[in-house]
Each structure stands twice: as C-alpha cells, then as structure tokens.
Length: 134
Length: 134
Length: 134
Length: 134
Image 1 (cartoon, chains in turn blue, cyan, brown, yellow):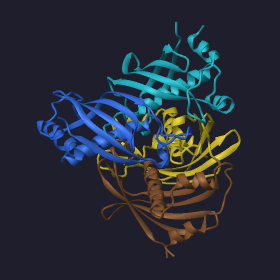
Image 2: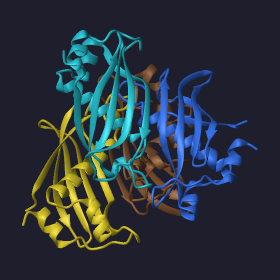
Image 3: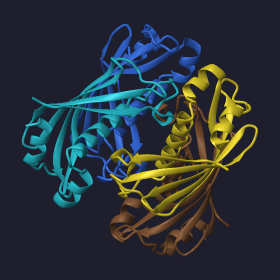
Image 4: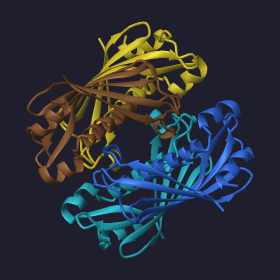
C-alpha cells in the first residue's frame, strides 16, 4: 500500500487574486512543490536526476476539483499518495487541506521523460519502491 | 450550436521553466485570458459585472491533457467553445493550438457566484444567449 | 540598531525560466515572503491587520541588483534588515544568499496604507519597535 | 536620439492580488514583454538569437517606483526608450501608463550574455543601431 506524504505550505499575497482567494492555477504549483519535496525526502533530488540521468518528470494529465478557496495567510497542507504506477508514469492523488477541511482534490499523472529528446523513459525502480514504501 | 472563440497568445520567458517549456500551470492562465476576452468580445466586462451585479466567475473543476509543450516565443491560439450550461455553471472545451498541432486540451467548469457571500447565483440569460450565438 | 531576520526558501520549477535560472521578477516574491514572515515572527499577521485596522502594506519603490542566478533546487536564504523608518514607511535591505554567496541585493520601501481609500496611514508604533528590536 | 516603443497590455485576474491591485512583481513581467516585443518588431527573435548566437539577455539591475496601482481589466501601455548603451548592456526607461496617468516608472539595465557560460558578450551592432533608430 502507498505511503502518504504531507507537506505544509503558507499562502502569500503572490498566490492570491483580486477575488480575495488563491488564484486557481496557483494550487497546481503547491501540488508540484509537495511532489518535489516527497522525492527529496526519499533521497531523490530532481536537479541531480536531470544532470546524471537526463531524466525529468512532466505533468501528462491533471484533474482538479475546487471545493473551498484558500485565502491569504492560510496555513494549508498538501496530502499526497500514489494511486497507480506504470513503466513511465506515476499517478498521484493530492488533497489540499486546511485543518480538517478539504479545499481541493486532484488526480495527476506524471511521466518520466528524457530531458533532451522529450521521449518517455522508465522510472528507476528504486524511486518506485521508495514511494510505495515497500 | 455553440460558437467558437479564438484568442492568440504569445509565449514569454515568464511563462517557461528550466525544462525549457511552458510551465504546466501557466496554461491555465492562458485559458482564463481566452474566456475573459470571449466575454469582453460579447460586451461583458467582468470588472463591471463584479461592481454592478456582485457577480464573479470561479473555476469549479478542470481537467487538462498535456500532449506537446509550448516553448518560448511560440505564437499559440486558444480555441474555446461551450459544451454545457446550467443555471449557475458554464462548461468549456478549450484547445491550445500551435498551427495545426494540438498542445493541450481542457474541460473546465465555471460557476457564477456572489462576490461577497461566495454563493452560487444564476448566470444572466443575456450572457448565456450571447455565448450560444442564439 | 536594527535586528536581522533570516528566512530560508527552496527554489522550485515554478520559479525558473527557460534560461535555466530563477526568473528575475520571482526574486521579488521571495523578498515579500521574508518580510511577511518577519512580521509574523513578531506576532503581526497581515490578514489580521487588514481586517482589524484596514491597514495593508504596499511596495512604494524597489531597486535590485542581480549578481548571480539561483537555480532549480537551490536552498537560499533571505537576509533582511531595516535601514530607515518614517511615519508611514519602512525601508528594508534584503540580500538573497546561497551559502556565503550574495545572489541579489535589494533596497525596498514599503508604505502603510488604508485598505479602502489607498491613503497613507501611520505604521503602529508597536510594529516599528518590534522591528527595531528596542 | 532613441526611439520610443509602445506596447499595450491587458490586466487579467492572474496579475492581481487580494489587495485588489496588480501584484508588485507582475509589473516586471509586463516590462519584459514590452522589451521582447520591441526586439521582435525590429526583426530580432530572442529564441533565434539564443539558438544561432548563444546570446541571451538578462536583467542586471532594476529600480521601480510604484505611483498608482493598475487593477483588473485595465488597458495599460508600456512606453519604453533606451537611455544608455555600452558594449554588453542596454539601459531602458520604461513607464507604465493608463491613459495619461503614469502608474510606474522603471530604469532597467539588461546585459547580453553567453547562454552556456553566463559570461558577458557584446551586443550585436545591428541591434543597437535598430534600437537607436539610426
């Protein structure tokens, strides 16, 4: 069974819009920060992976439901888990929480590609195992 | 049948990331610019609607497929059409094109809410009619 | 004499551009995060100040020198100090450091204004004293 | 004497913050769009220059004064002129105007560098001549 990774984020002015709430595309940035920090917490720095393996992760598809808005100064948490894996992709479920309220829910598929040719490459088994908590 | 609205956008440095391509959340900004300009082309300025009707549009849910990346200096086009309407929501299909290549495809549901109380309000019939090209 | 406040920031993909480095306007966001966290660390939440005192801070002028670029995955630090204060303004010096290297140096003047009328208002003495470390 | 270049920009939700105005770092993005379009209007595409000459432009220093805020839906204009040139740098004055009101004024120094080694390189004379309107 998949592990869960929780990453705290603070909402700043830069994240908000004139509607008084976090701008809708900004949540995607929060989600990527959480995926990046999950990898880092397992010992994988993407800057190292890009240099040594020419491997980068890109978002292939994403669906998000906006339930309640986050506002300036909010302390929120990104709760991430892996729901599927294939040779070259990982699918995450990511919830943005403010205390016990779910603000947004996202399903996002990430693909591993070659940095130079933008072609799919296999995700190293060591990363998959680490994320699955095996 | 729904009209189609085409809006051209130029890709600047600010839109790109160190992978050399447009950052994945930035496409959502492009899509909103196109929806805003469609409304404006029909005579509806959202700043006026917010002041006179306390009505603002928010993104309720969105799914996007990333097929090919846009890069710095690209001249792209957002091709938008309406696929569904309800009392308080409009659903759009929006394709980002570079010449005849489709780069991303998105389904996005927008809700009309009251600016102060964040509660759903009916979308004025005059807007629905204008978007439907009736 | 003014205190110093140090705030750590991690560079994510969203902060970079196709040149492979942090996009030049993004440093300004980092600097504001540091000013916000300094205030918070002294007990002042800007969301509370906006609601209870109708007081918000805005940037009046700013000058920045870019010496070396930050790149993806960098762990940087914002080192902030106060260099001048007037009735309605605070001037900060803010350096962005990567270990012992200075990447950017900024002088920024912040003004305290009334949220509704956008007119200058006096900065509460309690905030000035706290920042001065008196 | 230097030419002047005027570039129109529309303010979208993505550009604003919860204070109801354009977020202060976003003006820097507007300014770069104007510089990019000035070069393009003279026949120089930066993506081509990066590929064929390994030459990219970076911001070396910048000072900006914020006088009045732009708000959502504003139609603004960036008025740019060249105030100085050296072997590897160009200094611009850039004003953001809304009708006859000046919202911000900026002095920005751009340097021409080698894309791979990040070292200063001479700006091609053909670009300098074109910008000077000689």
